[in-house]
View: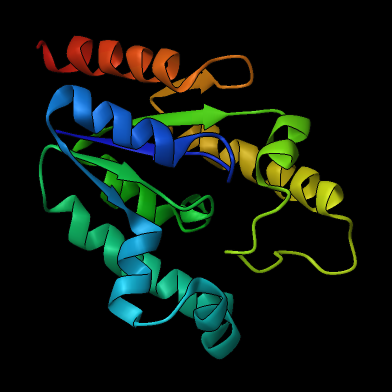
Length: 172
């Protein structure tokens, strides 16, 4: 069984995923890193050349690839839930955990990042995060087996909760 971490950028998926994998002696795979590796270009370059649909096609391909493996911690991109087939595929052999954070916390954590192109145009960064998060919340909620609010928790605390959840689900 895998652990799949979903949530908006800045909720801790990458850092927590690495720590959970370490604690459970599992491999951690970043879907975004795998997409970049396979495409041979950065995410902004993929989006510029192929648009968001082209990026999402690559994301769906990687979701299928990873779903066939076992004992992975999968650090998904924030938009993986945009295509229901991604979560159906990834969730078939996984405990899906939604890492949540407030708009203010997300903005403070990722305000300097440039690894992702804008998802909306003509809006402030905070307004974009709020708008996209509002649209995605129902999708995250529908896809998740468990939710963890990361606003006031350390990486260690979040990882501890996920390990406990995984052990309860898998009987380990």
